[in-house]
Length: 383
Image 1 (spheres, rainbow, N blue to C red):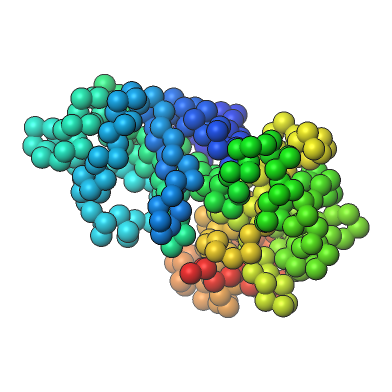
Image 2 (tube, rainbow, N blue to C red):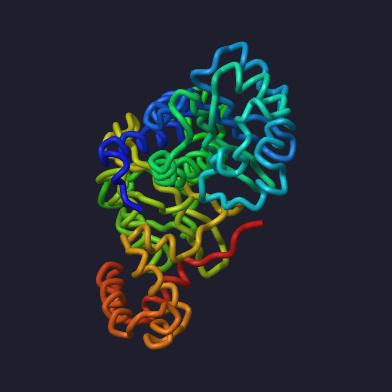
């Protein structure tokens, strides 16, 4: 996927706004309005709830008249029906956008519809289509963000779909950080003043991985050498592949948030004692008052975070092409060059060319090192 459908500078701006909202939920309306305008949509809505009780962590709507906002809770069953029901939604991949006109082509055919939400809420506002993104869908949280299109703008098209695909990992990462933070503490103080009260480890670092601030939870983690370590004032992990992945993530976040790409929800980390977690690297676009040299904030979650496949992480961090990613996937699974060529339906020479580029990009020299990297970045999905 390329950024041809959106100017790279604009994409970087949108991602920056999303990460602002990750650590300050009051900024979600700003991010949502910017995305809504880019998608040429009429309104937007975001909900993020704690499960199983359904308490709202975030509940924001933009450009929706107040009397319609007040009625949004009247139609949960009707909205579910509109999207085809729970059985249809539960099988949809969380990494892909959902487009109403494709899932249910007659959803906005108001002449034929009997759906209360369509007729009483969407039709009066002239809405014609919706593109939605799942932000969380597990035993601990449920959330989504949706952008509705006005009938005058026509249905959601390929451009909007491609832009949303680029934003999905960042929206999901922001929602994950929202879930990790004590949002009530954040609401009462600035981010810098609040991080000391957080029970999760939070570090601020410069572009060279030098630690410029660590909250008490992070200092305890560093003292234990648990998940993330400190070596001569710099951050590192228990294994070289994870340390390298962290270096690349920090470098890219510091240079241009738009280059973070589809790097999923976090970098998996573990240590010999068995501790499992994920590291989330967020850019600080304007620095932090607590630590002016800081260019990134690093959040460390121990458990409860789903991880993306190692191929996706490696591809995102080291800018592998789709072809290189496929070769990586087969090689680290133990297949030979000839077996990989047969599986992919290409010449062995083509596989060798892609493999050499993978070695060059990842900085390794042998297949064993590549497999070690894949193993280090592979962790089971938390239940």
